[in-house]
Amino acid sequence: MSKILTTPANAEVGQKVRVDDARKTWTVQAVSKNFTVLVQQAPFEPKGTLQYTVLDWHNNDRGPCNLIGQGYGDGTYSPSECARMLAEFERGDLEVSHRNHVPFTRVEVTA
Image 1: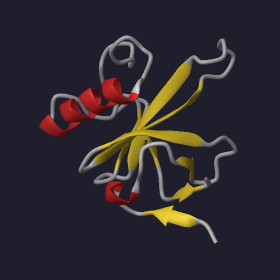
Image 2 (image 1 turned 180 degrees about the vertical axis):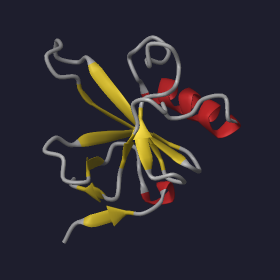
Image 3 (image 1 turned 90 degrees about the vertical axis):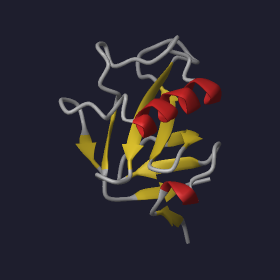
């Protein structure tokens, strides 16, 4: 039986998760009180190029941050960079993009 995450407190850095019924899995890269950053290989990009999404557990939305271009930092999405991003989310300096957000209902640990 798989484990379903219901709050960021249940998430651990390094876990592989599936959001809703998506085919591809994500890796938990950073966790804060209200948010979680997930990363995965970016499609059609060289190996090691990551894309990210932020889970907003309070609003059950996910998506990129609301900065112009929607990237963050140097684009490596390392654990420390993602932790800095989440600190900005917690302070209210960043939020999930209103334009490119997707609601989520289920986050399942796969490994």
